[in-house]
Length: 320
Image 1 (cartoon, rainbow, N blue to C red):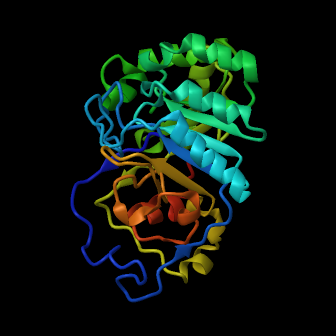
Image 2 (image 1 turned 90 degrees about the horizontal axis):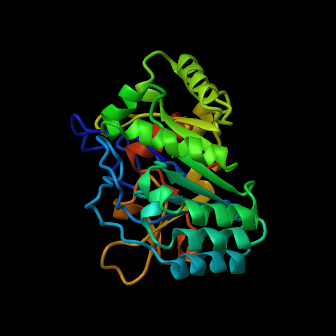
């Protein structure tokens, strides 16, 4: 997932402080777990590039979240099975997941388990290409239907994409995307709505033209196959979400992604991984729920601007 974070000024200090009540004293909205359908694995914050506005501050030097191991991931998958969770999808994000040398083993473990699919968020650049043979072997063993690689292309225009990810990065990412498509992998693309000043319809048309030019089998009008994420401005004013908001907005708590997903991270120096509520909040300890899926199966207070802007008001989700 690629989400730009902009911090021009600090939000009001009275907001998003109390997990129980909003700044206006209203009961804060909470989201109760409704069964784990998507388990996110953060493979580590190391990345081969440094983006201008990475929400997780990934870079070639940031190892605040360390490489998680295949054995550690297997432990959470085993726990999900033991608990009878309705797990359908395991997503791998980073950093760049292909920087983690254990990624292919983790993918093989997921795909070998009945009913599970795997989703990898990647920039499709050199780290992924190093594992071309391994990816082909996974495809030969398990097929392409249950393995999706979502490639980050912030915009269909190379110059705009490169402003965020560095000169020449668009060409390298597109080359990786084309390779995946030609090899028959199931590919999706992640873009950035804030980069599309022309509007969403025109932006999707631009992607469609790019996909057609390079024979990439991605339906640009499909909001899952081409996910256009909203911009995340931590400094902009955003309303807090109270319990009354569900009725006002006509939205059910179960539609918010923390109702059915959790993310596993391994902090640098930690003895074991931790389970957190949301992919967007890897460093906020208020959203660390425990060391096991059982401990993490509890309500989440929507006590962060991202909860409002991205999930409730923006209606976005990171999984398929």
